[in-house]
Image (cartoon, rainbow, N blue to C red; front, side, top):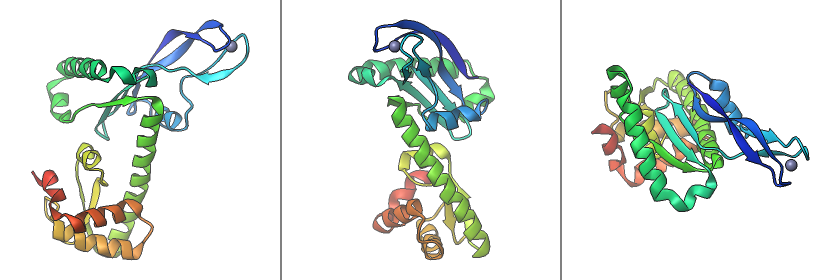
Length: 216
Ligand SMILES: [Zn+2]
């Protein structure tokens, strides 16, 4: 469920007014809010006195269950209280998970992200969208080159900074480094513009054990 509340806002001209600000975004309920957030269109208010339009900072709880992402987004000015914010987030997250149904609880086996400033969340979402675009290209190339793909959990992929769809030459339940490496080489030969897969190829060539965390 996405939530918005009436908040009191002070304009730089000194005028104080009330406006509806979003404080919680559920992407499964309101996918359009994700797009609006990325393009910097949420919580934009207009001062009734001077007409200035500006972004009104507000705490936002961002939840995308499909992508295993829960982010507590505090205003940038809270950055110097990071420890308190983290403790508060952990308390509230634990309480929220308590209230979920048993079947839901099992799905939340990842930690929430602590973010300061909506800009950082927008950058993260934009970067993940670019990865998703590359994943779509991978699926296409895989079909044409009889490669297989393996999907890992979105939260693990985020943690390791890699795409969540991996190419493999052999079908196995777990991604094996040699199998992924061989498939990556074929992939980037077909399309040398897949920046995120090139990065993974580079990482994996240097250290084959980076996939161990995913296998466990
Ligand atoms: Zn004003």
